Amino acid sequence: MKINQLVFAIAAILGLQGCTSRGLDTPDLSAALEHPNIVLIVFEDMSPRIGAFGDDVASTPYLDALAEQSVRYPNTFTTAGVCAPSRSSLITGVHQQRLGTHQMRTNSPVPGMSGGGPIEYEAVPPAEVKAFPELLRRAGYYTTNNGKTDYQFGEPFTIWDANGPDADWRGRADGQPFFAMFNILETHESYIWPEDRESVNPLVEIVTQRNRRDLAGKERLTDPADVEVPPYLPDTPLVRRDIATHYDNIAFAEKRVADIIARLDADGLLDNTIVIVTSDHGDGLPRMKRTVYDAGIKVPLMVRYPDGRRAGEVDTRLVSFVDLAPTIIAWAGVEVPRFVQGRNFVTGEQRGYIFAAADRHDSAPGRTKAARDARFKYIRSYQPDLAVLRPLAFRDALPTMQEVWRLAEEKALRPPALRLVSSPRGAEELYDTEADPHEIANLVGDPAHRATLVRLRAAMDGWIARTGDLSAIPEADMIEAMWPGMVQPVTAAPVIALESGRVRLSSDTPGASITFTLDGGDPASGNLYVGPFMVDPGTQVSAKAIRYGYAPSETAVASVP
Image (tube, rainbow, N blue to C red):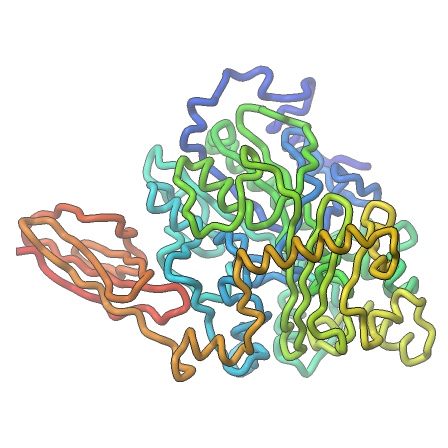
């Protein structure tokens, strides 16, 4: 593998030249970790196609260098195999079917197009639920997001101090701890599409034009002959080219990780910042993305501590995406709220199971759930009359998907691929992921695995009972309960109570959060209200409130006498 100058630069920053762990040569920083800075880097649509996670085809020198200084968690799973439901669980620590964000999508990103549901809507989570960056912000952290949000409960202005393409830690006050989230888009499934494709679908055309811009200068590194084609996809030159293109996109996109690390180091922050790297779900290829098979939900996770602790370790425990929120909250020294359904994956009790779900995707209905232990995977389909792969405009833009449809028409698909486009499918599936990592041989009817099947069924039933499941009711009924009359509720405007120079803010909407400014400015860009505060006489207070999924309130204004 050729390592260019930038790789040497990141290796030097991470202490990989001449020593195995920079932490061995630095003082104990445990005291400084009381309120550490935290950076979370989230790739799109990327299974563990990283050299450090055992992929020999991957060209990922930056991520490999970072992994040498990190704890790797190779058994990490998202709660969904598609972005928005998964991201909503990541940012709250709550499973998407409890939030009402389980359908993909609730709202189209393109004006005039449908998200696929009865109406365009934003989910309304339970009133107590808050995104964890808002909890950190309440505790004094400066919180920023760079890139995609996509939580399906709107864009609450109370979550982030800064949210945009240039957002990072540099806008904070001196000495203020920060949480900075970076989202790397260039590994998304749409970047596999041919650059010269044309489409009558407005979203596909917009994305294709973006890809031509974002991937300018990308190198062709991966030989299609070297990639592994899973048995459920056709082994054709087009499919191999798509997989190789995905590897090349990862190699191109991982340079952003090096840039972030270099900026932290240049600002003197690397030695007191925890860095986390993961992906929002598995690869963006058919039978991977939008499914609950391991190829759709198993993702890389690595954590680099600034004091060098556990550098190079591999921790094989099961980790769910809902576990990231409580772990990060605990690192920040904040009490983990009771609504969080995950557990601290560093200090908490180890999991026996992870759980995932897949529901409607655009206009294609579906309802599937999965329970997995360290070895076995159980999948339950509530609509077994529906094939795994059905026409879907966004997925059909992939040449690989077109190959599947072509060979299906020619009756030339291999049996594992043919099963994906056939219906009915099995109502239940059971796989030994150790012996059968591609999840091909369904063991439901095997008497030798009867006890495992019964155990995983019970685990799933217990999970559903504990967490709640809005996917069990018709989507229109759920929307009506959240948006009476199918109309988005409006958050009640803040009440500004003034007494002897003390200001108290409140809203009559349960679960509303409030931001404010003093003496002008948009309160949506102001300070997060955490409790009563003192101001000088004559000060003008402006405040705005938002409950997740509701429309924001009007601005309330009052002057302190």
